[in-house]
Length: 237
Image (cartoon, rainbow, N blue to C red; front, side, top):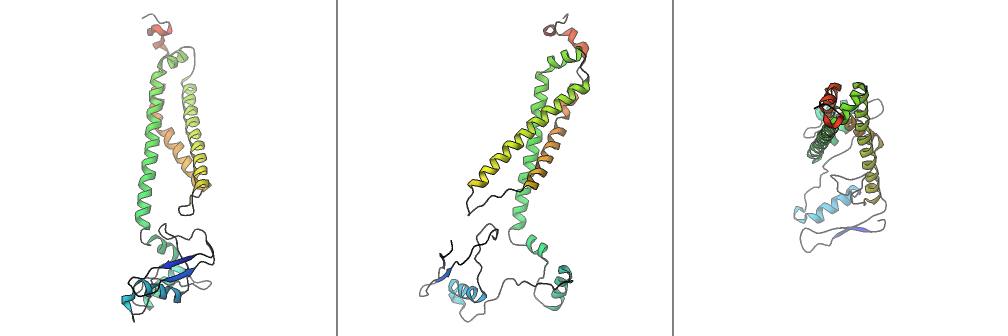
């Protein structure tokens, strides 16, 4: 909070800790999910010397420096020019710098695997659920075909059921996400992005409809003549 202090603990005895007083707060300014303190470069130098007192007399170098291109200068072109002019540096534009930050790529890969498995599970569960439901309703579907219901009508009904289940699940999931966002802490904030929710919802719906094609094939194979052979439907045998 504003007015509180962050204390840099000395790396060895005999040195006073460095206290940095918080004078302002910023949103969405974390690095690898860790909080960040923005200070002047002299304060950064002092913090490094306190944390590593054995490096007395050694210069404190910055890990990175920001170059702001003037109007009309392309950032990627400027990065190439810096690399040619300044030996020993790796100049990157903003997007490349973010992508190559330590820990970013493993986190992205982990979440990509989680999302892939989530979509896969949704598709498989939906497909098996409606396939089992179709098997259980085989007698009713046969009777509907016997009284004149066209196959297209039965397929549409199945697709409507899939849509209702998936959309209902998305509504419930979004509501839970809103509750999680409201209850999240400053240490690990959860934000809601409507565009991401909409994109994920469309993908889930398309996958669910595609997974239900097995159940659709079973519906299409229902023959009205089978009602004659089913005693439960008034058949002869």
